[in-house]
Length: 478
Length: 112
Image 1 (cartoon, chains in turn yellow, brown):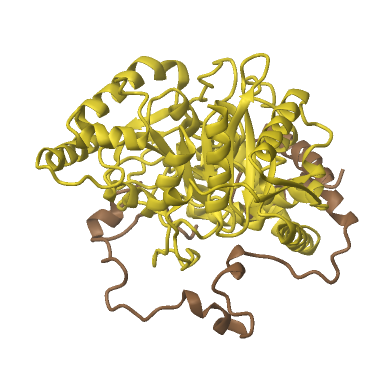
Image 2: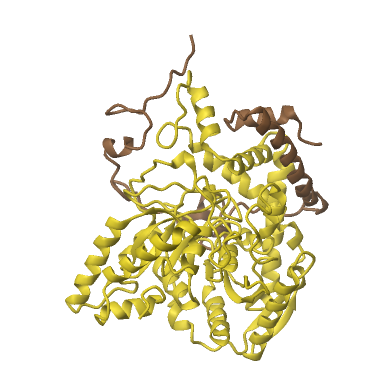
């Protein structure tokens, strides 16, 4: 048994049946991190003590013959934008280099309550702002499939850790594509649930109306298991929805024949790499062979998604990041003469270039004289983008698209052109704006052996259908 | 060029950022390039379109009600000690760059 290749069920049953222990699993993952991560850079902090304590608790349950919880003993890792009590949480930023939260993020607490063992905290773009993980204030993450290339972002560490078998599953966050795009680049499964499905309590805010927590996993079933564990109303987040959480895992096996899947021409236009197009078209054909009806749909406002996103997201970010002032936590500049001087210099020295760029853009879009032209306009176009999906979902049960227009690009390739970098999210941002769920599933590789991702988008709170489609497709391609 | 050096200085001031000379020059270039792209939004007529500020209108919100009544789904009874106990002083101050046993400390607010 290769302890680093196990899925959630396999790991849990192996511990339950005393074929291995959680401690052995944890140790083998730390060994692998020790060996591989210097070339990848996925981890920022290891939480060995916390992991050993939890593993020991699970092993005692198993030795007493007690039924293990759903993720009992399974090694997981957490994007460093989710607060962990007593464990440094940086958001990939120097401004939070020494921040030790006094409480746990709800999603993390729910995973641990279900028996998961947290190995450590994962690298990401600073404050989750980026599409390549090159904006981490610590070091970039490299793609395990080709270390000259980026893993995608902002949850680059979360995708790379799963792809390099340094964790069974990880948590990431998605504001404009930050779970799905890195999942696609690294060849793993990444699920962004419906907005409100998973509590944001303890997630360091980037853009509150767009932020989602979700799993990155080796397969669809593991993603479904994690979603079931972390989903559901949390009184600590008023935007978390009081909507029943179905048993996603039990529904995976339901047939997909007869499901209507939409294909929107707007997602297959200029800028889509030919190899990616071919792989996605082949995947659609496979779904058709499983009995799905392929239906053309139109999402006519798609070309406005990126500009809308970069106004809404930066406006919210400029407000959210105002809290970093060097008073209650975080970095404070030395030798400031006055309070105002201290604010400015702390923020100047603590934030990286992309974060400052977005704070500036967002502040500009909200400033007197520009609010109507930019922020209010973008909010109205957000309505139009959401209506596009409403119309399409009258005709179909899910929409299938490429996750990203290209496979993973090289480090440095887009680093000096913010706009080119923003366009890497062209197929993912619309789902964040509309609040609908989306999943990215591996659907082949390019000639250079780089993974390609298939994106399946669903109706609000209908993760079950996209998981089911993903599961059926995955089973076909294995 | 829509955004000038002066605009960048003004916005940086609003955002409590100082920015170096070099950063300001880059910011003028980058903001202009991004906003030029964003300007394609003005091609759309949105006169009769309601703005969308959040997704939660999709669940819970009662559209037949007005004002705060719309958001009744998110309300709850007051809980005497809150949803979680308040942090003890020591823990609340633990991350502060400068503090005594009771207060956060900052440089002086008023210049003489």
